[in-house]
Amino acid sequence: MDSDARGANGYIMVTPCRDEESNLKNLIPSVLAQTVRPILWVIVDDGSTDKSPEIISKAEKSHDFIKALFLEKEKQYKGSHYARVCNNGFTYAIDYCKKHGLEYGYIAVLDADNIPEANYFSMLACEFTENPKLGLASGINAYTDIEPLMKSLNIDNPLDPRLWQLWDSPSVEVQLGRRSDLPMGSARMWRRACFEETGGGFAEVPACDSVSVASAKLKGWETQLFEHIRVIEREGQVKHGLWDGYQELGENNFYRGFPFYFAVLKGLKYTVKKPFYIGAAYLWGYFKARFILREKMVDEELYNYYRKTRPKEVRNLYIQKLKRILGK
Image (cartoon, rainbow, N blue to C red):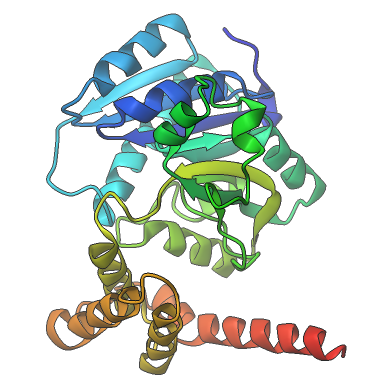
């Protein structure tokens, strides 16, 4: 088997994939180049109609730590469906480890439209080692049109320094200003104990990545986003369109329990960002869910977290920022 970290320090990884042939040729080399590879990497193909299955099968034949899982195609690739795809991968990976006696201490998710820097997962593992209370973590992402940018630089290696030197340039938009306690969803890692205590996978609900963070907090685990650990992700929301993406976000926020005033403030915040219509899309999604769909999260503990605790966290965050500005 390829070199990797074994035992309690090792990790297994799941990648959900649909029609990602253009980025798989960048993703796979970036994982192979990791300073600490996963002991098992399960790539779950969700009914791709392009050449993704061929690329995944070829990688599986070339590297015995890579395993392919092929699912029937469904219509949607978001919300609860995304959770089901990942959970299929988690189940396969955990069963495989039990069958083959593979030990691991962490579980990771890496979406197929991401490119992590070479020490992404080793640095995350170090953070877990340093903080035994840390249950769920990620690095920070930057959005760009990966393939056109690589072509413009005349490079075919996703870890070429010339690509990463564009970090935080107009070509590679870093998602700064995010809360440090909210790990991103597309390139994250759980401590195994946290993963198991919070259900052993994603809850099959909309915004499952956000719900998993709340679940970890409610179980007493710390969650963290580390800005010195980097991953490049294909331009956000493009796959479904900005309007649909922010409308879905508004619907999901109502479903999870965000109070009315909180959603309005969030929508107003989006209206000062370009393109300005995303605020209207978000508010339309929230109002549609509130007055038409009316569906809310069944888990009362999680629902109350989003309805009461999350607004308090945001308020305290802004109070701390204001104190720093005022020098108090």
